[in-house]
Length: 281
Image (tube, rainbow, N blue to C red; front, side):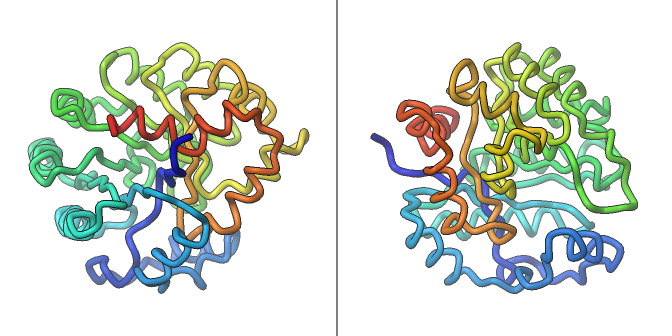
């Protein structure tokens, strides 16, 4: 049995380039998820949580949401993972750039820094997943062998449209870049059936369940039934455990997932084997 891999944790605040979080962004997340208490969690706390939860490896994402300096975020992730063999890094690109060239340049730099992928959150910059201006990013990532993790589903910034990250937009990207490995972060609730169909069509499309309470997935009336059924059968090899630390701690999430009734082979795949396969570990 392989060890547990947490496919997505956030870069601790102390390592991020300083930036005042816009109040319109922070208030939405604080109202729904109570995120204010998590903003200051440290690297020491991340390592403690991973150790307590029994996580063997974790993927640190440079989540670029509200106008940080993308290059500095990527560099911070690269510096962190270079010193810790239990951590793997995903960089990011400046989605607010006025031209495509800076975006593509950052994809190349992620590869140079030995990162394994890039994280994109298009809706936060009023872009859709299938925005044609993002296609050079996908092309560059595909050529470099990088995984692209894309925010999908609901978000809590009331300044940005929700439909920009629907799964059918991801389907178009998967059709146009058939060798590009894609991860739908947050598993696209409330469009879980739609995402399950996209993943069923494309073996290159994976789903992660970061920041999702396991009990909601298991409950029959919370909108997760298609995913919960298929992650035990036909999508067994395409669903990834992720905590989205500090939004959710693996210390809390993993015991709930372990008690969710997944078959043994599905648990092995979900908790680590799928991530190792995706990342060529």
